[in-house]
Image (cartoon, protein in one colour):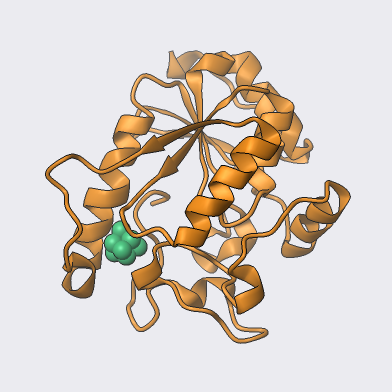
Length: 218
Ligand code: SF4
């Protein structure tokens, strides 16, 4: 029962891996699902190191960069990930919706598949960080997601960009091949562009549109 759970106020002082362990103790490892964009290796490394075998979902929107799919395969092999690919419903086929209706496109290719990915789970672990963008600046390390009926856990929420870099160095994490080409935040290919040095990382997502979130984290 969600109502019987108390989320400790000290959770945001824990190492990200200990946050994942806390979630496994609270909800049972089999009741957790991690959603990862595979734009970097941080979240999957943190989660799979803390709870080996934890389910990790990649939402395949039909518009992932080939490099992202390759990178997910590499990380799956390297870290023995329990990876599950969740795709849109069968009636959703590649089309031009992203050109005229980005919200509708994200709903069919991200939001609806997420609802199936988390169905039956008690907690959803995401890679949201406060440093990602102003819209994420107040994100909690764990909170009830009443709309979806489970607890959302953000173990990386307190990590700065420097923390992520340091974590990657310490654990010798591989990098997504598009990072060296200027892609700082990587989503679907039609809606992602490289950014200039010093430019906000997420400014490369839905550039030219007021949209800043795909709907997963709203
Ligand atoms: S990010 Fe772009 S291509 Fe991907 S689901 Fe959303 S609108 Fe469609």
